[in-house]
Amino acid sequence: MLLYDEEIISTSCAGGNNLIQIPQNINIAGEIRCDGSIEVMCRVEGESDIKGLLVIGKDCVWIGKAVADTVIVEGFVEGSIIARKKIQIEPSAQIIGSITAPSILIAKSAKLNCEIFMDNNKQPIDLEDRRNNRPLAIPSLDFPQDSRHLG
Image (cartoon, rainbow, N blue to C red; front, side):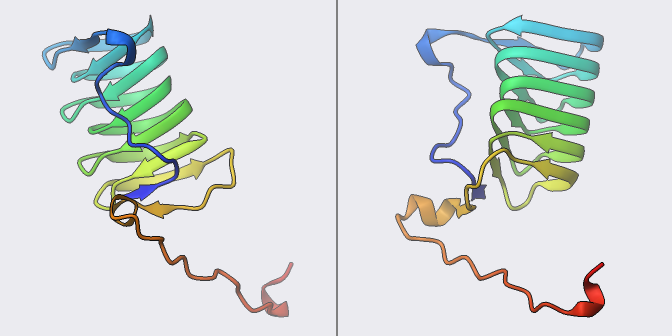
């Protein structure tokens, strides 16, 4: 996993709040709005504005725009995911579209075909090295200037 922040997101809610679950046998077409934490395990065609944690479950198919404070993606998303705080993309996730957040955690085996937008200058940290308190060696990305590639 690549970690763009110091902590891994947990599905347990702070302050004792319960995680509202929308089961697999429901289809949603339209908007989901709530203050709190929600796990969606069904098909969604539409958008969300969640003031809290949004978990897009393993069996979820989300077509549209998902907006929340924090997002954990385990399922399939075609569209855009916007998190005001952070996004965690699990190994089972498949995303086509775009993701936007100040902090992003991506599992190496997640399948992404999307644009990634971040609002900060943080360097990626390998999660395994983070857990073992080892610094990550990030190779230099300096490319030689070649006038053939300059506009």
